[in-house]
Length: 279
Image 1 (cartoon, rainbow, N blue to C red):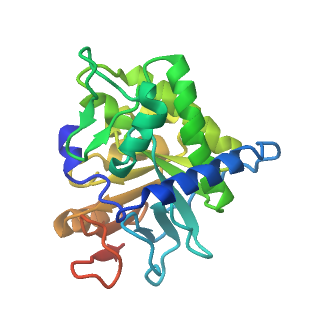
Image 2 (image 1 turned 30 degrees about the vertical axis):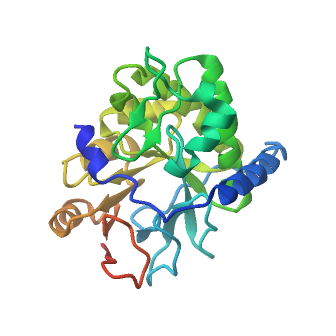
């Protein structure tokens, strides 16, 4: 069930240069050093509000949109509820060299010493199998989360919680959830809400790990929306990529959840092939 998710997840943003990544990392590290005292209580996105998924690049949201999700390297949309996308369990493809030079010990390797790769996306997996490595990775990803807060985002969504299912058994579900707990704590310490991204089969465990709401790709297509609702109630944002699935999901959940239709590459408005609809 998890393998098919790779066909549609994370068609986000255009390329980001390494210089931009390093600059963002420096900025985020400085933001983290500001401390966590006095963090406001996280505020959830408005339930059943019109939302837009802009991981392919920011643009002026369509009329009526109240919730926008953008990559952590982008600035939030003015006046709206903004969710900051963070790839928390795997590298971005263009950042692999940086990780190998600076944190090679935090990248997952098999018994032969070869890197374990999510081949569908050309991303290496983080090694979250020990408390020490989880703590080190949480320091880095926590810097990114702190940067989201510094940029005045309202929430974060952490991608690839289900990395364990593609790790050839090296990463266990418990390892992933333990690391998720560190990231939810990092978000909450900054006053940010945090979303579970996909992984309908572990929504109960995700809730216990501290996630506040869910971002679910194609839960209508695969009949998973009810699982998210069972744990997160109306605090679920649904992204469908096929018109028929969108129509069916709207009919069943549109009065309760934020449901949108997007094109698979998540193109910016005005580009050929851009698709957006909501109910």
